[in-house]
Picture 1 (tube, rainbow, N blue to C red):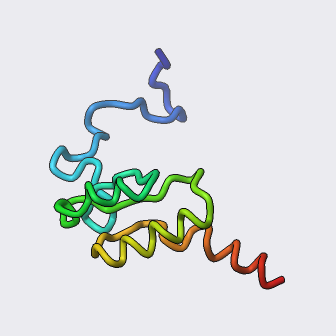
Picture 2: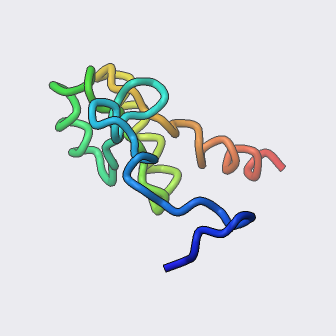
Length: 94
């Protein structure tokens, strides 16, 4: 255990924790749910006021576009809807 001398960083303690009511909530007031395929969107259909979808980073551009389109139809919010699609469209144009 690090000694608490002057000049050292303060130790981690229980007082630095997040409040239990707001823990795991994002800045938009919703919890995140990882989406890896289109059927995961169906789970968010009834819970779209509590959860927001976050696309997995290993999705292909084609699958990502389909999921974003389906999320618009179902009125499900996505945190990173424009993530990979915009960069891949730039590469195609060049």
